[in-house]
Image (cartoon, rainbow, N blue to C red; front, side, top):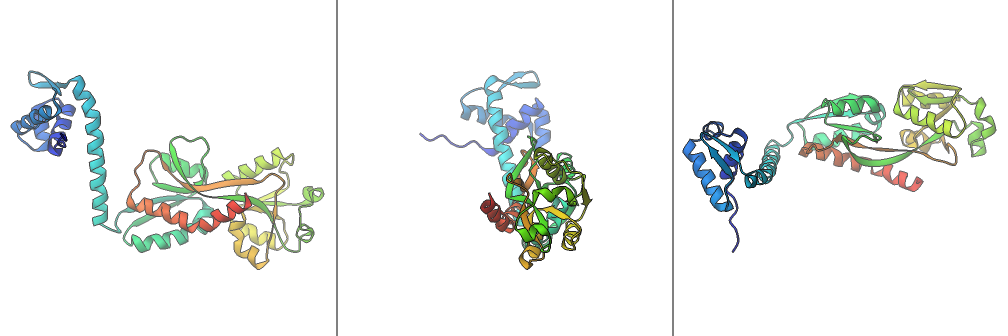
Length: 309
């Protein structure tokens, strides 16, 4: 014989009584009469086939069976609330808010295309963007000041969920007239004479590059650091130094022949980009859409990264 499903109203009464420990307070909380609460609990205990509460005067406490049952009820009611929220979002299509964080690079080269597509589906969504480096994005997420961050993969942070988008590789970028470009390879014997042009010294990427060269036995000594990828590319074009950038941020210049890309060395310096959010958060429809659009927009970067692996 198939068991009947529990009545949602009975579950709500059970949850309120378990939380408040009083028929009077549970009735007040649910805007019902005490007799309605009593009837609901009686019907629920009959259906469950066991006592769920111990009565002691006006106060009630859960039995062992009641404590176990409460765990299931809490999950059921939470799922129902989430389903209701999702339906409300659908009924208010395009409304809501989206608080984003992104590195300066992502703001410049990825976000514009993603947000243009996003606005077509959510025209009335209020979007805010906090640009900043890796550490800033992590701090904003953990302090609930943003919902999602488009950033490099955080290392060892169990508090965050990370949805990978693509891998890239840091490489030397030089002007086509540079001796390395003419030779088609990096000439290690001239490395000490070169000025490396690197991204912001306070950035996570700078630390990755610095660690890479130290491990390769070539500590950074002669370098410039700038806070703009565009400025780095312009200085490299006019021959003032050698840039260390990911090729996808200079795709137009590489395709036009204005810059030439060369590997850093035999060992590759690779980074993983993705979307991060606080672990355990249930993403809204808008947030899920944003993540999906990021995956679509960066698909070409992912293919390029796979080919370079």
